[in-house]
Picture: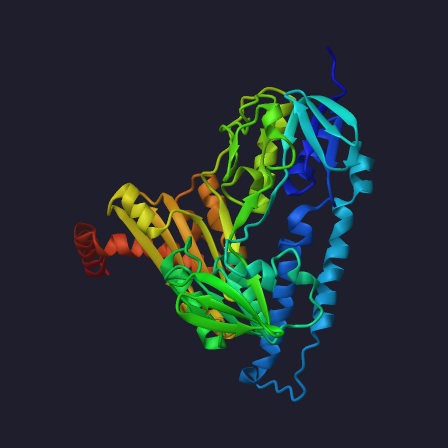
Length: 474
């Protein structure tokens, strides 16, 4: 029995749009189902608005502190409403790339509505039954809301509504100190809020290299952000127009609460049981080909848990396209996955941490570290905070890297390229434009040769004798 489509994509976020657009350009018959707006969390509530706000906050911080460069601003003010207008303008500029008209122009049938599987072979939306050779679940995730007494009654913000604010809260408690909490916390503080970060761990950004995370924490303290560590928010109460948050035995009174405690996969509304698709609280279960328990249904992006980044969803989408449209032979690879937390300074990572490398490879590793303070361009720009830390095996194989400092999210990519192409760390020591911040990586890489030479007494003796002979010959 024939089908109407080659592929039906459920969810119009990053992964779903890549699959739908690429499949259509391959002349496949494609339907894309989205219950709200194309673009997903990234465009409307995530990457795009947050980075726009971060940039605005960074400009405000530089203006406020410009006197260190001899630039004095006597009338320093922040118009928060205009700052949020910038965020909206950026979204509006990017939105056409994700518009229904663009995808319809590529040949995608875009269907808006909430649908569900009615069996393992059919997805129904707006009373229309969609039958396809393959389906893709790309429904994304939503903010995870912790079970805190009084939180719902008192009211709170998440990344899905914080960018709709028109007035900057005078005080803001942020529950959670992961990437979203840290990025938005620093931004709102720089734009005028008195920010308190409530962190259940002993470190900010617990998935990052502790030494790198310490640089971010010290910057937050320097700027005046209050950090409550090893504390869980366990109760919230309304007090007039304000809210009181209890974190262990500490009390914080604020105007608004922003919840940044992770993400939950969107798996509940599409009747995965009817399709024979297994899932749990972490998301849809997939194999290394990104097939679900129903082999003709694939899944990618936040809905499968794992690395919840836009670029990873796009990376997974490439595997899905090949397997779903042709033959399921490709396996998704997560060996080299970079990411960046866009605080100021930025923190970027790829591969193993120092402790993970030691656990996996013993102590036969080198940790190559270069401070930004020894990079001339960093001195010129007063951007001396942070370092590049590259972890390698004795043979120079790169196991991981951690950069914290200005433009770390840009500087990580040459290390990603080297790891992806299985290049040794020596490849990073090649010529770099002077003066640029990228010298931080080349200097770190070069330190391996210096260290190995300093430990090779035999080679040092041979070279000493060689030069002595050459001098005697004139």
